[in-house]
Length: 239
Image 1 (cartoon, rainbow, N blue to C red):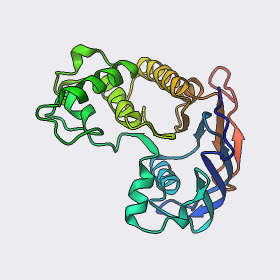
Image 2 (image 1 turned 180 degrees about the vertical axis):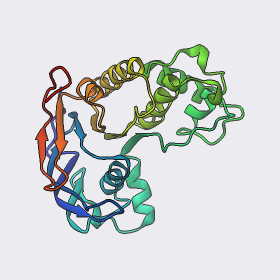
Image 3 (image 1 turned 90 degrees about the vertical axis):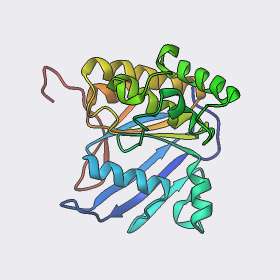
């Protein structure tokens, strides 16, 4: 269900950004309404990382405009304003840092407090609710993150990303190292969390089964033109 809103959470208009790829990153047009989930394939890891930076305002396009929550990213005035702006995004990425020696409870408490040894009782209750929401069993909270499997780590990144109730969830090749079973289950958890929170999400992934499971609208970026085309269904491994 889409959330009524006068402004989309994300609007991109004819952006170009040079980086270390063979050609600049181009994207002609994208509008993401509040509450909608969209996947985009056709970006490698560096391009996806750059796209996240452009959307969050960490980088600005060489040409064109990115608007988030009704505001152009180039209009953000200074570092303090930008840091406050970041709170509106949740990012799920392998680039996200988890403290390997700390418990899962301590890692999930960090969006709420830096006092994690011990975790305050009121924060622990919030973490337990968050873990349950994101498909994490309560008996895992006392384990060190370094001892946990990739399926748990995926959900830890998701829990950290949604902890502070962002307006837009960005998924940056989140399943690159996951098994097919883990990908399918994780996509279901993301979709469930987004539906419950009426949270908009943009998944940048080249994993087509995951893309289709996590988002109702699936697009593919044509790198040469920047146009977004509907992702074609495959039959017996062929287009």
